[in-house]
Image (tube, rainbow, N blue to C red; front, top):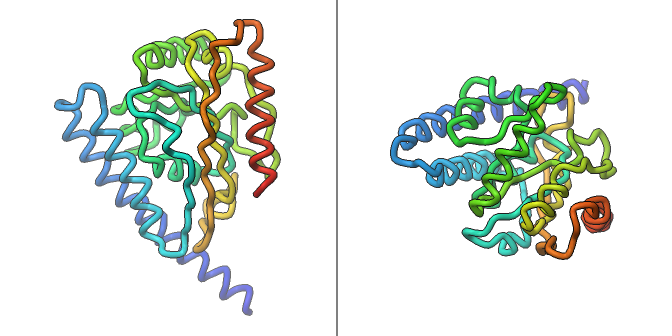
Length: 245
């Protein structure tokens, strides 16, 4: 009986959270559409998107997110941002950084009503896995942003982890960082799987997440064929930080 009551309580909280997410997403998407003609570089739009993430966190008094090191991301400087990925709640947390960057996201997300429209309006980068030419197109778009000093965010694990272990990284972010001579900034996220586990839609009423932005890693000393060494260095740094959690 007690477990049933707890489950029903969690279900009710989850429904309320999702309703709020739908409401705030509708408002934010509408605002992004309205400012789009006056926002050619999507700077205002991305600030509105940042408010979307912050609003979702602050709407639930039992959600706590501690963010440290955000000052490592300097204004008007392009970085290859790499973050581990545990939950859809990671997206909310990363918007709470209050920084401007372009996401690389699964192409399927761009088809989601409201959310996908906002992502398209903000010129985020779609990646269609398994589709011929998609990775090449994604890299070309990301390269152009980086050369214009616009940061690009990668989830180098490729997908959300089902456990707390850091999965092996894919090569793309590290090859691109060396090619464009842009520094890498690792971002370590933990605790978000408590809010929303992979494969589930029920959110929890209470969770405590941590986001730590690590200092930038200079890539100017790496040759193009040394991307594996760079990838290993970043993986070790992030894995060590996760171990502290």
